[in-house]
Length: 242
Image (cartoon, rainbow, N blue to C red):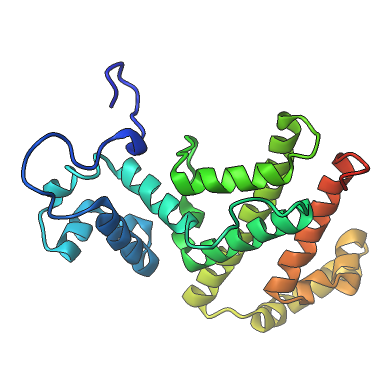
């Protein structure tokens, strides 16, 4: 907490405060342990007590390094955002650069499914997140107002996060129930045919008869939707930039 009762960003809190014995652990070690636990058992499992047990220390001792669970989550998120190598500067091809960001973000979330369960209203602005912000907004620094760039980037992020959350939830459902796309189609077939035969749902019928997306792989679906979003961004850019 700050003196006025606000929240002090973990990035402003020194890892070693004042004099005293050399720290037995680092924030990086604590963060890595938390990520390993969350990857295996979910974000709720990454408690201070569980992390301390893995490190062989007492839970209360960890609060000297990480003041709160919110701080721990900020550290975890920023750490995994730094896993994929992003160039120091945009290439000058905004579409290629935003595609790189989208694909990298999806890969990170797929490696760390607990990210899908986080809904953080407060931005963290850790070093890796800031690096991504600089790269993505730099890619759109092509003569449009910053508010326009933010809106377009939020649209892209919204697509990526919504799509990957759905992928992760479907993976969890398959693991929980053993449900496969083939089994789902077989079980829902009679009901779907009844809906189509009723004539009351012409657009739903078109989906069943004509849509290609349900038959694509996950990668193909993601790329198809991503290209449509990028097309929309292109339509909002100056003619000489798109």
